[in-house]
Image (cartoon, rainbow, N blue to C red; front, side, top):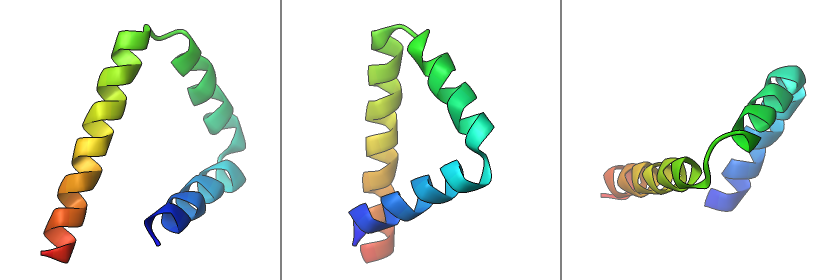
Length: 56
C-alpha cells in the first residue's frame, strides 16, 4: 500500500509540475553525494515516524 502511494504522489508531481520536477532533478545532480545521502536518510526517518504515528 505504501509503495503504491509513493507512485501516486510522484506521478502527480510529474503530471502537474513537469518542469519543476526536471529542475529539481537537475539540481540534485549537482549536489554532493553525502548531502543526498543525508537527505535520503532524513526522508526515510520522517516516513518511518509518520507510519509509527499513524499506525500507533
